[in-house]
Image 1 (cartoon, helix red, strand yellow):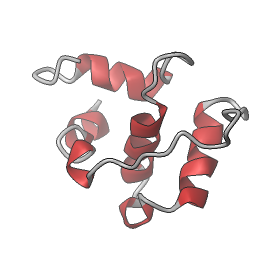
Image 2 (image 1 turned 90 degrees about the horizontal axis):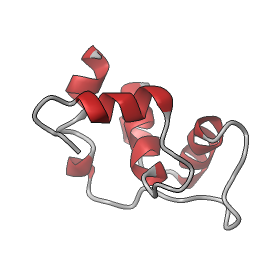
Image 3 (image 1 turned 45 degrees about the horizontal axis):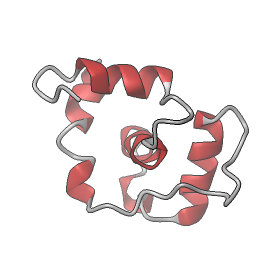
Image 4 (image 1 turned 135 degrees about the horizontal axis):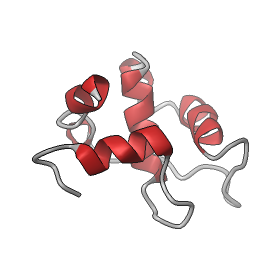
Length: 84
């Protein structure tokens, strides 16, 4: 990812990750924060709901690909994404 310009990251948030890319947990976290629900970042029900919308109503076989990284993984890119 090119963190200096934010373009690939913004593209990922706007178009969604490729189903096989493995970034669904991070994409889910970005959407939660950008929609103003950062306080619910680690709520599995909120993550599952957002992830279902990202996946067009589908889910993973196990149900949820959770975001379980530290919050600083989301924050550095969120301002750039909001501006995109």
